[in-house]
Length: 294
Image (cartoon, rainbow, N blue to C red; front, side):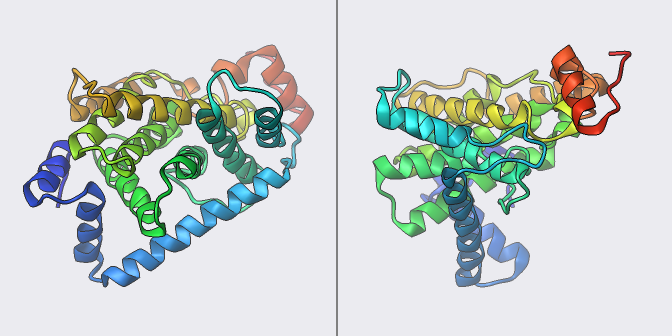
């Protein structure tokens, strides 16, 4: 069993296999189930993600009215204009936001690694799919690769905003997506690790400050940012750019930063954007109990 990214990459290189294959074999060993069952379970997760994106692109709105419909706006913009950031990047943004809009609307999503960060992995997957034309098995392997990196983060740091701020939540999700993109695009295990590190490095220090304590504002749009970073970092790694700080040390830095964050910035809805006048007004409108001290 691997415990660090360094061990994960070493196993893949020693056996000359993909990172996704390392994760599949570990799942088979730990859970004592067949390869077919492992694949079947992940196929179910993939289908949930695909359904959520389809639902989002038809248009959804949350119960509070704080979020919804932005994924559709972006798709319309892509059809009518020439996006400055390019269609692939913006498609990932739209589908990542859409997944989180479905979550906010009480729809069914697949936590990757959490519900609040559920957009980055499927958003990037179903965007790069249009360019890389993967098989269904390669799409499933994308999720195993993302999961392998998430496994390391969860066991050495944290993946929730309540524990370590949004750097742990959307930061981890974007980084997981970045590593998976690299493998699908034909990169090496080490390039996946470099892409992961570069994405997470750019999310360090990101606080978790949901307005009214709801996973809507700014969470939905942060999944857009995480997806964007994932694609840019994957491209950098595939181009040969490396992370000067080893991946495991970046994870360690994220952990230490999270431990020093004040409670108000760890999903309590007490600080950051949640404490702005507009954030407080939204909270009062929804719950009628804005914190006038903030």
